[in-house]
Image (tube, rainbow, N blue to C red; front, side):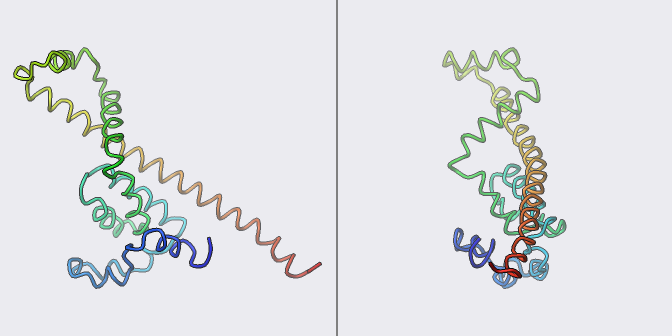
Length: 191
């Protein structure tokens, strides 16, 4: 990263990202604004970043609206990184929603073992065009399977994101530590 590190890069990529001071002065957050001012919620550490990744992915899949607020409020008691949590909620957006709906439906059907024998009547009614005989139960069954799939996606993606971001963090820090002695030798003994 060039000058400014991760925060500088985030500000260049997402110029409207609220700062800690702006969140403290927000009139809607006034009752809990002092809690958003805690510096541990804005630091990029080996513990706060994986927590932020997990919360952002969880909030992104668990509710369709207000994901950033959910991620930010969950970050408070869990001491997760607020910018990372808010940024990862954008994984689910209007452009990617059809893909996630299809994946959640298939995942929910797989986990619940819903197959064509279970939904045979509904599929027949939809294929034949007889909408009058298509009941609300069959419609709600499809919605329920998809909702269950989103719950599974939220839990799986949060767990996988937590462990992967922890591993990546460990690898990046390990690489920095292996480069440090080489830098010191070069500075001490210029050729």
